[in-house]
Image: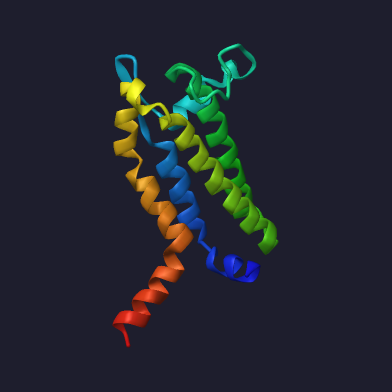
Length: 152
């Protein structure tokens, strides 16, 4: 069973880079403007050691940003390391870890969607990221299914 998971998760470097880019350019409404997720990672880095840094899901929108930025940054690091490594099992483990961290950061960010209007804009702009992760996770099985159904 484990071998099946590893064989279905073989994604290209281009798809990994595209996933990082689409995740970094999710737009977030904040104040009187918008920010990219990439900028959130950079701007909220000083808050990682202050009282605003909290993993509480019921915290305010401003307190979600440092945690979402940290999780996104860790996911990007895992993805970049998975691109550079040659060991297949470690590469796939880091790839899965990167996907999980990306999705946890988005879930954490949009958890209190009804309380923050800045999140509504982000839910619209993360569709390219959703599409790239679906292709990365299930691209080969979907193409095999397509060939099985329509090329028969």
